[in-house]
Length: 435
Image 1 (cartoon, rainbow, N blue to C red):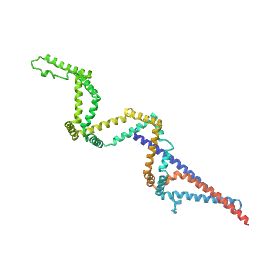
Image 2 (cartoon, rainbow, N blue to C red):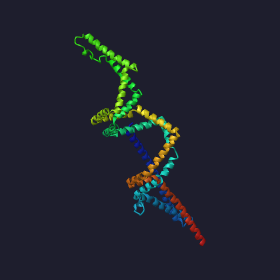
Image 3 (cartoon, rainbow, N blue to C red):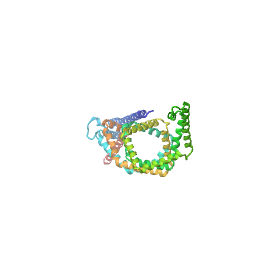
Image 4 (cartoon, helix red, strand yellow):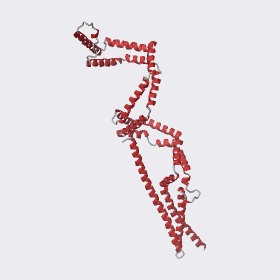
């Protein structure tokens, strides 16, 4: 499954989950509103009955007082809760519909609160000090399945980066780097010094062996390779069979020479090659004429279209190889990356000194980022709230906290009833004492 498909599927699932959660919150809010309103209606009914029969039954005065207090508390808290989100009964009473009217101010205040209380160096460092990021990362990467997953995700990101890069820009970069690090410096002294070290270490012998073996194999597989090199130089009166014998003898002699050079480490031809290489490396370092000749060759290549062509071919080859390796889960690149991640995880889990250094580095980096970008991070909150529609913001907040706010209405009804009953009882008792 492609990354785009995974992202689309993931967004669809998250949207469905959020939609289901909002539906549950909306239903719960509706139930709580209905309960709080039912208590208000019940209080009104009880008040009406108690008020009508109070003259006949004196004790109903206490019931009336409790119901009256319950209605007052319920109405007052209904007004307070409703005023947060909208105008009660549609009346534009001052200081109502607080959230939609002060949405932007709330967003700024919320951003400042987060910035001052959460996005601080002390808070971040104290939180990171409660656990080891390196240990957790090491334990996670030490699992081959997790390492394979990280390698796969990294491959997807790398493929996206390859598609994003401009071929022309990369080719220009390669050309610029080649000019800066290869062509702006003299080649001759470096070639001479490196070549001299290789010859001094007898590294040229392996190259000579490879060339001799390749030449011997090729001549053996192509007996007609020399053609009529010898016979064409013989006088015309020499018979044809003699010409063939001469060509065949020349072929065998060359093969024999190659055999001898291959088998004899001290063969005169090897010694001659070694001497030539020693002389060449010395001239590259010390002969101005040789250095000028090398620089001329370099300049000709630099000024020719071949450099740009070389950069283009190099990038095409690298890009094609990388793209193929990144797309193949069984490629050596992907396998090596997963194996390297496992090794990193094992080392992080086992090496306490390394994990402590990494934790300290992460803490420093997080602290620096918070100190430098705390305002920008906090502004995300205020900017997001500012972009929200006022009605949508009100609905979002009410869905999150509205159910709990309905408990205020319920509590107000109960507390109002108790307060009304207590006030009526105290007033009745005082009047009885004064009578």
